[in-house]
Length: 320
Image (cartoon, rainbow, N blue to C red; front, side, top):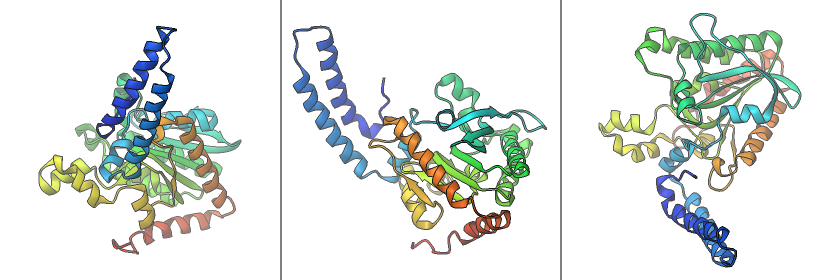
């Protein structure tokens, strides 16, 4: 059964009616309802175009969090071959919120690392809803160091509400682990390309996304804090998340304008979850393009360009 967001309720009613008619026809060969169902389909298509032509930042957040969006595992399964997962931080444990390992992308050996939220209740709990603990960031550091040692490009797939804020994570040095991962992103002498495929939440995302190239899916978001968290701090009211989403400038279009994102990857009408294959293909094309732009750069040039990219962020000011 399809999952509809709250602003898609009128669309759910129309598509539901069309499906009801077709279900009735499947049970009665004498019924001819195709013309009526087709009219409802056209009405639904028009409404879908209208809804997604004017998405507010808050609605973009809702789409970015859609439970049926393709997740990190979906992209790895579809775009990478010979994926060999590597586990553990060699210190405490393996963090299942972070996937990573050796693979081939278009027959090129790479290291791929990403945050996985899970796609059902059991896997979401096992993956901690994509919120990494310190051992997840330390695993990412280990894999990036391995990639640097063997000269392998690194591809990261970002999709997290933020780093896990639990007591155990703080006791094991959550902020230090995030800082080390961010530092490692900036210092490895191999191409590092990043794609925000859903939520890019706070330092938990930056620790994977301080790359030479940062791409964002059209309806993904990337911000220093969630709109709900921002609203709770500024107005003591999480219900003001719509105002916070507007102020945070967290959409792909805003971040491209500000120079945080280098490219915006178009999504199918209605979001990546409505055509997963097309979305995954578009991300694959973007990764190929970004790696192609970096392939002839030396280690020193990659590091210098990467550092300059992040030092220059904000130089255009908030009026950009």
